[in-house]
Length: 119
Image (cartoon, rainbow, N blue to C red):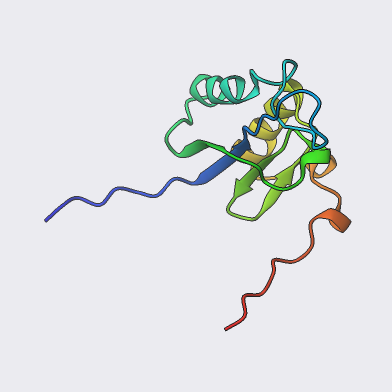
């Protein structure tokens, strides 16, 4: 019988979408923000929580005008306008401390209830 492996406590989906210069849609990754995923991963390692917290590079999360963005699961917590300082506070207060950082969450009018699937 195979041993069970525990599930991660959190998944952090970080948008890594990059569009060429001049495109009408903004992108979460540009010259000023390209290091944020690595910074977040390094922060997880420094805090000793890499593993229980899984960082995942993802493509567009659909909130481009508010980027850079990341989604923390469980809970559907969408963080917007990311900076290194915001990532540090999110890791310390939400991931380690258990309290979402409300001032960095997407405004409610842009993040309503999940769409119900039609059966």
